[in-house]
Image (cartoon, rainbow, N blue to C red; front, side):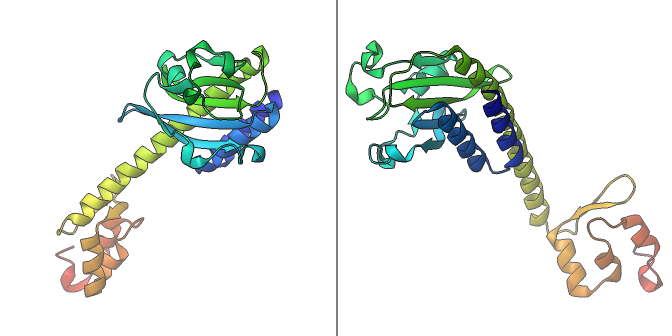
Amino acid sequence: LLRLEHHVARALASVDAMDSALSSVLQAICASQGWAIGRFWQVDEAAGVLRLAAQWRAPAMDALVSDAEDVTVLRPGEGLAGRVWRTAEPLWIPDLRAEPRLMHRAVLPNEGVISATLFPFFSGGRVLGVLSFLGRDRREPDARIQASARVIGDQLGQFVQRRRAKDALKASEHFIRSTLDSLLEHVCVIDSTGVILTVNRAWRAFAQAHAEPALLHALDGANYLHACANVQGAQAGDA
């Protein structure tokens, strides 16, 4: 299990794409512990639902499970994953057929599976999602697996938070860029030393259309103050 935890840590650190990282983690856990299906459910806080973000299943399950039949959105308390999300507590069911809360076959997660274990992962005390694993055989609770699940859950919580922060930063940068480019005025953003951080579309278009040496040299990374100081001739006063 320690090797599995290290594998998960490496997978999350080396893969930037979230889908690829999650699929790798699910496959590693299922292959290591003999689970037939692994699923990653992520909380959509804005919509107040749990969404299926990634899954992996053993090839033997393809004939028993159809993607079209999979439930991909759950409300709090709905299904096994929704229950774990609501309670924020792990769940282990040795035999789904004997589970009193699943009296009706329609609410079983999939045909061909017998056992299930699910656990939430957190960040800052909030549940960010749920990992669920389904097996084809009856399986009693395993304390070692449950302890390892907590470690992997912590790793996933940190990974999801990093991805959210990165996506938020990217969205913020896109908003700023779009706002600057929407302005008709020539805008140049500089730091305290005069280094140009960015210019907007109007600035670039004017510089290219008029072949203004001062403007062509005053682009991202250049020092605007130095560029102005080096302007000579009739344009020196404007600079």
